[in-house]
Image 1 (cartoon, helix red, strand yellow):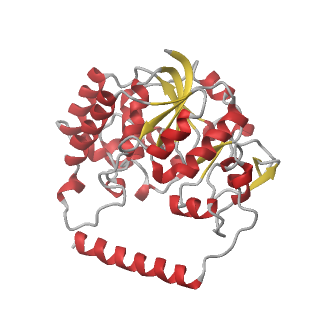
Image 2 (cartoon, rainbow, N blue to C red):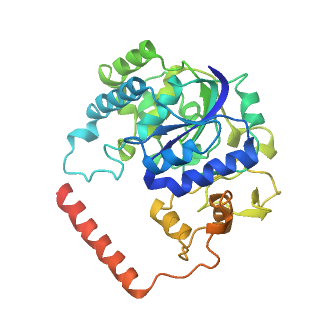
Image 3 (cartoon, rainbow, N blue to C red):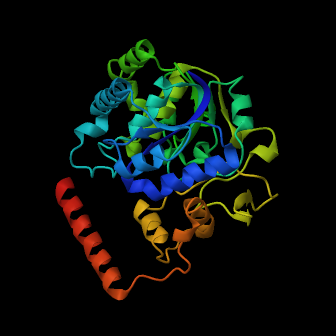
Length: 341
């Protein structure tokens, strides 16, 4: 077992983002930190070639653990009231493999950090590792500020049980795009007990139906119900630790390809491109002018090991390409509406 490492979840679809993430880890977090990539579907070939060219980067190969988490999620979501409401449109991530990130709890690192592939790491992880000496979960997001209607958990439903106050639940809401934790949490016995609560005791209804099939919503339930100590940097009493992380919402300042919070020039842990398609990053990496915040920073890390392939100039897509893409979006939207009807 390794004392500490980093996980991410990847497929060839996000190849360009994975390369950029790995390079940002090496430069900003530490060259010797081992990284383990959990396959999103089958073993990705392009990412596989990238892994074989790097020291300290491996694939997660415990398929029993992956299947255990996928089976768990399938059973839980099948019991959710939303699953019975076939007239409602299916969420975009329906039956996706995002739940595989939880296999990190069964991986080779005693302590670990998980980053979504659409992320760039901006600084060392010493403060996260230090927090893991006192807490079992470490987060860095602002999910706890979301309006109640779209929050991960049904605050009023949970409050009525008398087990938790509304404020206590809200302070523990979080996403799954970044988290620090420890190996062995949610072992098979604990997962069986949680599944009983979710399905037999109907606590699956604690999970907001608007986020049905969302791994982050399920994760918020699991971390809350496990009753383990949790720390979120955005709720830290130390103001220097409270920063933004979303590419589409938070203003950052670029200093030599490292991003800082615009207010106070506080160093950020990561930039997360959660609202941007992997296709946008593929096009950007091929030299297309795509409207992505801090795209120059992304391109810097994407081509750090192959600067000769970095696009010298970004050019807009031509009219034919734009028309074809618009047609494809319309067709996709029509197909999706037919499936939901």
